[in-house]
Amino acid sequence: MKRVVALVTFAAALGVSGCRQHKDPASAPTETTAASGASTASGAATPPVAANSNATLAHPLLWSAAKDGKVTYFLGTMHIGIDAEARLPALVWNKLHAARVFAMEADLDDPQAAAAIQPTAGSLRDALGDAYWHKLEAAMGESVASAVEHLPPMVPAAALSMRGLPPTPAMDKVLSARAVSEHKPVIFLEPAARQLAILGKWMDVKALKMMLDELPTGEQRVQAMLTAYAEGDERKLLAISDDEKTDALQHGYTAGEYEQEMNDMLYSRNASWIAAIDQLHAEGGGFVAVGALHLVGPRSVLDLLAHKGYQVTRLAP
Image (tube, rainbow, N blue to C red; front, side, top):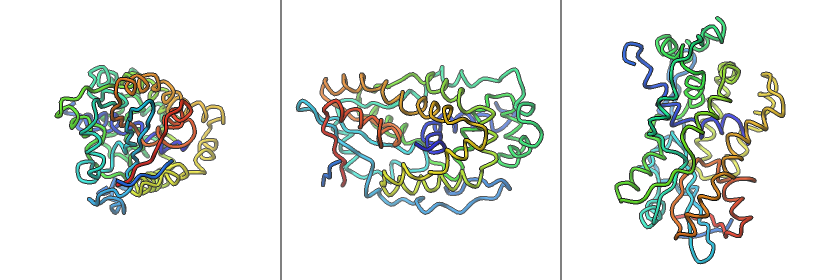
């Protein structure tokens, strides 16, 4: 599993809200089995990525999981960068409309989540040192850097992880809003506080320095990820950054730390969701929308369900 891709799909919604609210210092069917430009370091806008269009996704990351005569549908989301209203095909919306209940990772509007992003006693400028602080100012702008100086490093780190992605409404929020408008029960698979705790653990000063050192490479990776998602290519999504572990090791991470980070961000969370998904399914099934990397590859949610006897099928319009 790839580190930057995991950070993007995991941190996008929280990272955007965290940085944007502090920008101004003065304002605080066929079935088959199974940017407008982000800022560069110089402040100029990069060209829009090829996947940034309003074309309907021909191959959404949508699966069915059947067991005991019931079916639950799973959509792999791109938390930001894809306009859900414009680009998700009718098949996705029809499955959501027909679902009894909607489930997503966490409540992104949980007041405890916003309260957790509070000023810290120390200074991020001091923790980074002059050289890296100047890199942060170049990447984010002096006013934004000043606004986040006393916030946890996960706030600017999350924002930097999304460079190169078009600014769109969070797909998870768009989907949950549709479910709420249809008076469906909404289930959260984990507390938002858990996500923030993991973000705080791994998106630290060391991670922020690595991102600042690798800005062009990181932006290229998220653009490639966006294209892979738009194409519905789950294999490409998993294989985007084969050299990323090497990059982490070169920046002072041990192999054990890298694996633990992936476990915290993806694998252990996947496993912890299975009981709730089992119950949701047993009660009649539903529609589950989580970050795409939680649904693809070994130890993914769908892999774990398949080992529990679910028949997992990729769907296509």
